[in-house]
Image (cartoon, rainbow, N blue to C red):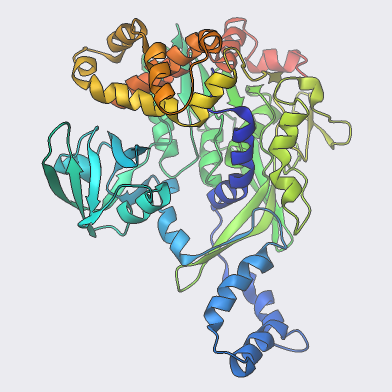
Length: 551
């Protein structure tokens, strides 16, 4: 499978966002007021009252009138920046925008959108959300929000989120343009909890092999996962591939619950330990339903936190084979303390360790996030996405799985079977149309212009067969040319198969959702193909894993 994005910009995106997205995701520990007593002692008392004294002095004596609250807001991030990369301060405004997606929902109108020609186009209406209930449909264009024009050069994703998301039961007035009609349709939408799926795909891959994609470890993930397992077992699946690629983590409790399904009673899943928090062991209770099922876990450089807990537990107990590339390396536990104004401090309070004793947190320097943020790019530059030998383990602490296989700490989870990135069909033309958003934009344009035809098929499989016969790549090249991406015949031909496959996948997703998207988008995925091969060869049973030397 080829990603829709170029590797280097992907690396940059992950590097910049990882500290926020992954740090915020791992919030399973409840706040403890005693945790903040040392801070209070520092601010008030003895010779360590500098912070309070400084702000009090500024308030009383500074030459101009100042807003001390604003100064405090500006100072807090600077203080927190002196700690680890995952401790962070979240303003009240950003807290309000973040929603409760880890809990399986957020409050909004329930649509997926794309910005096309400075206009917000509805790509999908989320089932069970408020927009579906009042009749908004895919293809609608959002023109007005609360009687204000909502289009043009100033439109941005941030502006869209700020206007469409909001507190539950609040109303927003939308002006919608539908199809070729000149009439503007008006909808009054009451914001509500919109369901968020964390297990977007589960399907039969090959005979009795089931595939399950988990995007994060949220509040609804366990129930979604159990439903997926039950469905696939009913369809005859006896082996499973769990895909944690780009899974940035989530709740420790959910990682525990999923691990529990595969481990025996008394097996250690993970333990946490910090300066102010004594060691706490989390063990399996033996009531899992998948203890004897052959298992492969897929990971990559975007797999972090709770997904690393699950992968590490399976690896250390020789319970499942880990296939892919080295994971992100996030082994720090955060506790979130919410202040009265709605802002929050997310503070690292402990490290977690896999059953063998390793902490998979990669190296960082307190107060200096530059190298940490550049880590993914550095991996790319030294060839780690292409060659296993580029991963150096000589200076990493050595541990062993239950069966004695060597594993390493302090730098993520290393896969048992390395799979390089797939670069077939990836050239400068493909990268240009993919990274500019033109590929996705044209997939939506084609969908919009051919919606009636595509919807006429009885299944996504039939629709996909039809689309595969259409000259989608040539149509894309014409469209891209109007956007300033000139045609490169040789490069287009070199990328034709990849571009056609991805266009079909995205068009199907626009009509049939993830049920059709994932099987199409991942049909040539190298990791999945290798996982299927290993299962068929009988190499993923616990006994086979113990006997094979994958390291």
